[in-house]
Length: 294
Image (cartoon, rainbow, N blue to C red; front, side):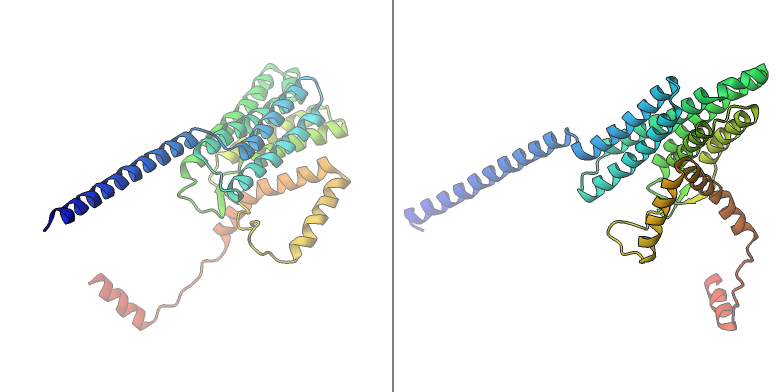
């Protein structure tokens, strides 16, 4: 090997080593950029979550001022934004752990704390007029609803990754908030103020809180997605539902929320009373079972 060949190989090796260092520098730079990017948050889905949080806060303020119809409407507006943030995050691929935690905290305010304060301000606090015991049971029902919503959200965050996407375990907090808010809206619209309506508000609030921490299964409607084809019937049903809501919003929304709330216990009861399927086992299946046991 002559001097020129050895010098050429040495230069080539140096060049390869130099390219490796440049590549490592580029990788380090990309890692730093990725680290910097991970410290930020995605604006659009978290903006929807913030709007839901604001609607829940407005519902609390409106109920304190005595505007119970506006408070109930604000809770329904919060549900719209709560549904949009997850959809936008999945469609734009901007899901993050920060968004999930922020969404849970927003749900706690909008669907856990706000409905309890709204129904308490509307009439549960006046249960004290019927006796001191009923007064204590009134605020206890409101607190039970709030703590049930917190437990429901915490349980969902823990088991959501390992459970079926088709059903929810326990009544979700947005439908529970719909049940309470629509009742208050309906009662305010009809001018209910008697003892019977106050006791009914107590029962609705306590029932909503109990169903949230129950083990009943509720259909999640997640199979009806934006990218999945559905039957043409849905195009007819959805406008009909909107028309019914427009005719009498508080009454129709309360009926829808109550129907969904009782669907869990009815589904559980239907599974208990329906006849079990009888599977006939032939001789070949018995032989296979015997081989498996041996």
